[in-house]
Structures are given as C-alpha cells and as structure tokens.
Amino acid sequence: MLKRMKRYLLTLLLLVLATGQGLAQCAMCRGSVESSVSAGDTSMAANLNLGILYLFFTPYVLAAVIAYIWYKASKKNVKKAQATSSIAG
Image (cartoon, rainbow, N blue to C red):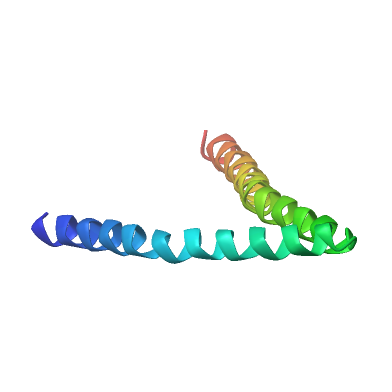
C-alpha cells in the first residue's frame, strides 16, 4: 500500500512540474500567432486551431474505440458462456 502511495505521489509531482513548461509554450504560440495575424497571414492561426481541435478530439476517439472493442469482446464472452451453459444443462 505504501509503495502504491509513493508511486501516486511521484506521478502527481511530475505532472505538477510539467505544467510550467506547458504554460510557457502556450505564451510562445500565442505571441507567434498574434504577430503573424497582425502581418496579414491567417493560415498559421487556422492551422493552430486545427491542431488544437485534433488534440482535443483524439482522447475521446481513442476512448470510444476502446469502449467499442470492449463491448464486442464482452458480447462475445456472453454468447460463449450461454453456449457452454446450454450444452452442460
């Protein structure tokens, strides 16, 4: 139990330390986009928005695919269990 608690604490610590770099990158991207938009180039801002949407939807699509595979496997196991019980009974 103590080993698991140490692992969770270490993971939380690493996540907290990693957020500082993420915030710095956001400021750099924002500055870059603002300067390109003020110069008249809107393609960089549009590409950045597409990248944000891609990063937003990827975990949800991945979770949906895993849920679908899990559902199919569960359904297959139920059919197998029913077939086994009908043969035995």
